Image (cartoon, rainbow, N blue to C red; front, side):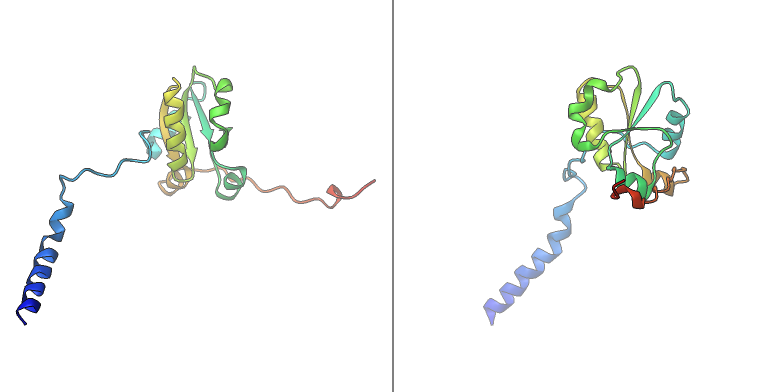
Length: 150
């Protein structure tokens, strides 16, 4: 019986101290990227300067057509970005875009490490949720002649 009481006392002590194991002084988890996540207002200001800003959308084409995107952008999928840096202009401020800014943040980090001027990353779904306007394109209708022979 004495062993049982000691076990309960030890368990109670552990439970009571558990909240202190996660104190505010504990280091936070490292962010997925170092890129600044742009607010809707910041993105709108950059979009208002089309001769100075270049938007690079790192999503797949099916994501852009399903979710929507910005009216003018350069489409380079995240997996192809590193091999595409030679033709990305260095004289423009870059904005990287993805659905929730996760891939865009990593892409922004990559381009910043290569000397590009990067304003930050944006997620189009958050942008739209906060009042931004996305462009939605209708998918082209499938044609019956695509597989037919003449």
